[in-house]
Every structure is written in structure tokens, then in C-alpha cells.
Image (tube, rainbow, N blue to C red; front, side):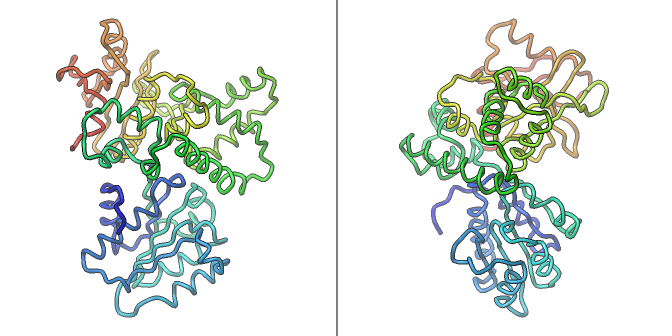
Length: 401
């Protein structure tokens, strides 16, 4: 097998669901490593005694399978290759390319000797008819590009963490970017990803999309990661710069971006009122390298970029993440798990007393006893402030190393 970067968290998640009566649906932005995950998982299956003949694998973006145009053709193709008297492990990449694919997937699922795994590059795969037909019969594995810990695993030396972190941001967290040494090549690669998403995941569903308007919205969101945002605010900003656009259109384009996993939407939660808020959201990017690709070397708030990285890491760790409102202040993240809540404040540095006090204030305003963290890029000795644990963000990202 090729020398892939290991993705142990995702592999272990698939192993937990092996042979369970559930369709495994792996979702995530294009080129985040879904197909490679299948390779890694198949390798583990073979190590664990599964025979090669039990594995059926096809990628519906591969021209080799151009003859598969309907759900019935897909179903018959797999059915003809099933082995009797043993479990068959069926892997289908980019299954959404087949109209009504859910009928084929359901037809395989109901067979007792089929364990079905599919990938999709947009969230529409789990909407509409699929959700209705397969309700309660699938589990979603949400995949992101490389974490900093996974990125670092590609290097023999774990020194120069600050330099590697900077390269992780600028050169992208998409796995294949690590194989490209020249920044021009990385830029071309990221451009190909962005164009592919635009054509295959957005334009394919929205024929009337205004590319100039859409580009303006993308640039606005990319330039405002970590800032409270609203569709009305975006529309007003565009109108003031001479681009007429409706709030409805902005909302529609934002939905396209979230559905294709380019951006993630973080809603707000009122800590004191213990209620979810419908006003004010924040958007975070799946990959900071795409920001550099689209906006160039335009400086961004390093604190907001770090906030973006922390947000994605909390998602990777299986947490439900919200922006926290605490009276008139804000705590960056509330991470909710079945075990309870955790609170996170993120700042690039708190080396001055005033900055430290300002960042601790929202956490100190929370009176419950759930864990509270202040994550910064400062390399300081272990410290706690009234029960709030201060940690270096890179060390937090590498926990378990």
C-alpha cells in the first residue's frame, strides 16, 4: 500500500461500526482524504483476516466506471461481484454522482452479507430522499483535512513547531499538499480544489448562480473568520460597495458553501440563559490554505486564525461546538459532549497583564464547574487562573503525542 499519512481516529471509528447493520457515510470536502481513508481501512481489514475477494471497491468519478449511469446499473454491478457465504465489504466513492443512488445503497444494505461504505463531497448526500429512505440506518463519519497532529506525523523531526505550524496554515492542510514542495504548485493544487467544488458541488446544483456575487461573498467570509456575522450584514456590505444583492441570495450562497464543507457555521449559545440563540453566527474555514489562495498574503488576525484551528480540532474530537454568550461578553467556544460542557478562550498571546485579564473575564463570568481552558501561542510554564487552565495551543493540538 502507498505510504499514506495515517488517520487513526477515522480508521478506529470505521472499525467500531464494522459489520454493524448501518450504512457508513463518510462526508467531507473534496480531497480531504476520504478515498485514502478507505485504503487505510481496507488495509486494516486485510490485516484482521478479511480476504481480498470479499472487498468490492469503486470510485464513481473514475472514467473506468463511466458505464454506471443509473442506480440500477450500480446495484447490478455490485450484485454480480458479491461472494456467497461470507461478508462483503462494499466501498463506493462519490456515490452522489449516480441519480437516486440511495435505491442502490438500500438494496445492498438489506442483504445480510453486505457491509456498505460510501463517501460524498457535499452535505446534500444526507438530505432529501436519502434521509427519508435510509432514516435510522446510516451513521455519518465527518471528515476534515489533516489536523496539525496528523500533518506533523509526516515529518521525522518534531522540532521547529512554530515554523511547521506556519507552513501548515500557508501550505494547506489538504493531505496531497505535503507532496508538493513549490508554493506555486501548492497554489495551483488549491485552485484546482476550489474550482472543482465550485463546478461539481455548487454550480451543478445552482444553475443561476451569479459568479461575481458568489466570489464577493466567499471573499467576505474568508476575510472575516471568527467575527460575528449575518446575512443582512453581508448584503449591506456588498450593496455599499456597489453590488446589489438580496439577503435571501446571500443566505442561499452561504448554504452552498456550508453544504460543500468549505466553511462551517458556528451558532451561539447563551451560557447564563441556557438557550440557543438564532442571531449572530461565526464562520470558520475548513482549511486556512484556501484563504491564502483566494486572498493572497493579506494579513489576517493571527488570533482569529488560531481560533479557526481550535474550532476544527474540537469538531475532530467529536464535540458539538458553539460560540458562547456570557452576559455582555463572549467566550470563544462551548464544546458539548455527552459527558458535559467545556469552555475555551483562544488568544494568540496574553503576555501583558491587561490582555490576560481581558481573555479570562468571560471564563470567570461562568459560574459552573465545567472545565475551562485558555489556549494561546505563549510558551509558558503550566498555569491555572482561578481554576482556568492555561495551555500552549500547539501542545493542546498535539495532545497524546
